Image (tube, rainbow, N blue to C red; front, side, top):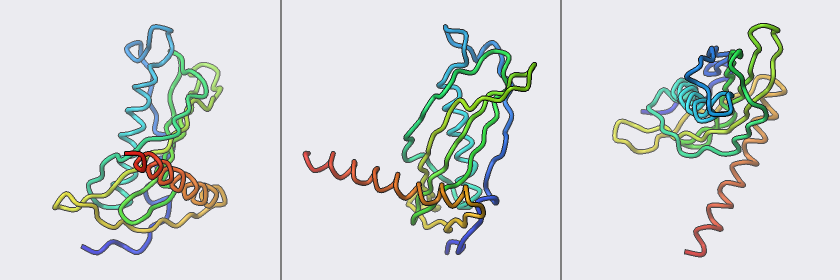
Length: 164
Protein backbone atom coordinates (compact mmCIF):
# COMPACT_ATOMS: atom_id res chain seq x y z
CA UNK A 1 0.00 0.00 0.00
CA UNK A 2 1.45 3.35 -1.02
CA UNK A 3 1.75 6.03 1.64
CA UNK A 4 -0.15 9.29 1.27
CA UNK A 5 2.02 12.18 0.12
CA UNK A 6 1.67 14.50 3.13
CA UNK A 7 -0.56 15.46 6.05
CA UNK A 8 -0.73 18.63 8.15
CA UNK A 9 0.30 18.56 11.80
CA UNK A 10 -3.26 19.43 12.84
CA UNK A 11 -4.65 16.23 11.26
CA UNK A 12 -3.19 14.05 14.02
CA UNK A 13 -2.46 16.41 16.94
CA UNK A 14 -3.95 15.98 20.41
CA UNK A 15 -4.72 19.29 22.10
CA UNK A 16 -5.43 19.40 25.84
CA UNK A 17 -6.35 15.79 26.53
CA UNK A 18 -7.63 16.08 30.11
CA UNK A 19 -6.77 13.69 32.95
CA UNK A 20 -7.99 14.35 36.50
CA UNK A 21 -5.48 13.28 39.15
CA UNK A 22 -6.78 10.90 41.85
CA UNK A 23 -5.16 9.58 45.06
CA UNK A 24 -4.07 6.33 43.37
CA UNK A 25 -1.88 8.41 41.00
CA UNK A 26 0.31 9.70 43.85
CA UNK A 27 3.79 8.56 44.86
CA UNK A 28 5.45 8.49 48.31
CA UNK A 29 6.23 12.23 48.06
CA UNK A 30 2.52 12.98 47.55
CA UNK A 31 3.10 14.14 43.99
CA UNK A 32 1.88 12.45 40.81
CA UNK A 33 3.87 9.31 39.92
CA UNK A 34 6.06 10.23 36.93
CA UNK A 35 5.81 6.76 35.40
CA UNK A 36 2.05 7.16 35.06
CA UNK A 37 2.51 10.44 33.19
CA UNK A 38 5.12 8.83 30.90
CA UNK A 39 2.82 5.86 30.15
CA UNK A 40 -0.07 8.18 29.27
CA UNK A 41 2.24 10.20 27.00
CA UNK A 42 3.36 7.02 25.22
CA UNK A 43 -0.25 5.91 24.59
CA UNK A 44 -1.29 9.32 23.34
CA UNK A 45 1.81 9.55 21.13
CA UNK A 46 0.74 6.21 19.65
CA UNK A 47 -2.63 7.75 18.75
CA UNK A 48 -0.86 10.63 16.97
CA UNK A 49 1.44 8.21 15.08
CA UNK A 50 -1.41 5.92 13.99
CA UNK A 51 -3.62 8.85 12.94
CA UNK A 52 -0.79 10.22 10.80
CA UNK A 53 0.36 6.95 9.25
CA UNK A 54 -2.92 4.98 9.14
CA UNK A 55 -0.87 1.94 10.22
CA UNK A 56 -0.08 0.00 13.36
CA UNK A 57 2.82 1.77 15.07
CA UNK A 58 5.32 0.83 17.76
CA UNK A 59 7.46 2.92 20.07
CA UNK A 60 11.06 2.84 18.82
CA UNK A 61 12.61 5.37 21.20
CA UNK A 62 11.81 7.85 23.92
CA UNK A 63 14.28 10.61 24.58
CA UNK A 64 14.65 13.98 26.20
CA UNK A 65 12.09 13.38 28.92
CA UNK A 66 12.26 16.40 31.18
CA UNK A 67 10.22 16.64 34.35
CA UNK A 68 10.10 20.38 34.90
CA UNK A 69 7.83 20.51 37.95
CA UNK A 70 5.74 18.09 40.02
CA UNK A 71 2.00 17.63 39.64
CA UNK A 72 -0.07 17.56 42.80
CA UNK A 73 -3.26 15.95 44.03
CA UNK A 74 -5.50 18.89 43.22
CA UNK A 75 -4.24 19.13 39.63
CA UNK A 76 -5.80 18.26 36.32
CA UNK A 77 -3.23 17.17 33.71
CA UNK A 78 -3.41 18.57 30.18
CA UNK A 79 -1.62 16.51 27.52
CA UNK A 80 -0.62 18.17 24.22
CA UNK A 81 1.02 16.03 21.54
CA UNK A 82 1.81 16.57 17.88
CA UNK A 83 3.86 15.09 15.11
CA UNK A 84 7.07 17.08 14.67
CA UNK A 85 8.52 15.31 11.62
CA UNK A 86 8.57 12.04 9.70
CA UNK A 87 11.34 10.18 7.87
CA UNK A 88 10.65 7.05 5.83
CA UNK A 89 8.85 4.79 8.30
CA UNK A 90 9.59 6.74 11.49
CA UNK A 91 7.95 9.73 13.15
CA UNK A 92 8.88 12.02 16.03
CA UNK A 93 6.04 13.07 18.31
CA UNK A 94 6.53 15.85 20.83
CA UNK A 95 4.65 15.82 24.14
CA UNK A 96 4.02 18.73 26.49
CA UNK A 97 2.16 18.13 29.73
CA UNK A 98 0.75 20.89 31.88
CA UNK A 99 -0.80 20.75 35.34
CA UNK A 100 -3.79 22.95 36.00
CA UNK A 101 -4.67 23.69 39.62
CA UNK A 102 -8.34 22.75 39.84
CA UNK A 103 -9.09 25.52 42.35
CA UNK A 104 -7.04 28.50 41.14
CA UNK A 105 -6.79 27.77 37.40
CA UNK A 106 -2.99 28.25 37.49
CA UNK A 107 -1.32 26.24 34.70
CA UNK A 108 2.27 24.95 34.99
CA UNK A 109 4.41 23.24 32.33
CA UNK A 110 5.48 19.99 34.04
CA UNK A 111 6.91 17.69 31.35
CA UNK A 112 8.35 17.69 27.83
CA UNK A 113 9.34 14.56 25.92
CA UNK A 114 10.00 13.24 22.42
CA UNK A 115 8.84 9.83 21.17
CA UNK A 116 9.95 8.05 18.00
CA UNK A 117 7.45 5.64 16.46
CA UNK A 118 7.76 3.29 13.49
CA UNK A 119 4.80 2.36 11.28
CA UNK A 120 4.39 -1.32 10.42
CA UNK A 121 2.62 -3.01 7.54
CA UNK A 122 0.49 -6.15 7.72
CA UNK A 123 3.69 -8.22 7.45
CA UNK A 124 5.15 -6.52 10.54
CA UNK A 125 7.83 -4.70 8.53
CA UNK A 126 8.34 -0.92 8.49
CA UNK A 127 6.30 0.99 5.91
CA UNK A 128 6.66 4.49 4.55
CA UNK A 129 4.57 7.18 6.22
CA UNK A 130 3.31 10.48 4.84
CA UNK A 131 5.49 13.53 5.24
CA UNK A 132 4.25 16.16 7.67
CA UNK A 133 3.37 19.73 6.75
CA UNK A 134 4.02 22.28 9.52
CA UNK A 135 1.31 24.95 9.51
CA UNK A 136 2.52 27.53 12.06
CA UNK A 137 5.85 29.14 12.94
CA UNK A 138 5.98 27.04 16.13
CA UNK A 139 5.37 23.84 14.14
CA UNK A 140 8.11 24.86 11.67
CA UNK A 141 10.53 25.39 14.57
CA UNK A 142 9.69 21.94 15.97
CA UNK A 143 10.02 20.44 12.47
CA UNK A 144 13.56 21.87 12.15
CA UNK A 145 14.55 20.90 15.70
CA UNK A 146 13.34 17.33 15.12
CA UNK A 147 15.98 16.88 12.43
CA UNK A 148 18.70 18.06 14.84
CA UNK A 149 17.51 15.58 17.48
CA UNK A 150 17.41 12.78 14.88
CA UNK A 151 20.97 13.52 13.77
CA UNK A 152 22.04 13.32 17.42
CA UNK A 153 20.28 9.98 17.94
CA UNK A 154 21.83 8.50 14.79
CA UNK A 155 25.29 9.81 15.70
CA UNK A 156 25.06 8.35 19.20
CA UNK A 157 23.87 5.00 17.84
CA UNK A 158 26.80 4.90 15.40
CA UNK A 159 29.37 5.78 18.09
CA UNK A 160 28.02 3.14 20.46
CA UNK A 161 28.04 0.42 17.80
CA UNK A 162 31.59 1.17 16.58
CA UNK A 163 33.18 -0.16 19.74
CA UNK A 164 31.36 -3.50 19.66
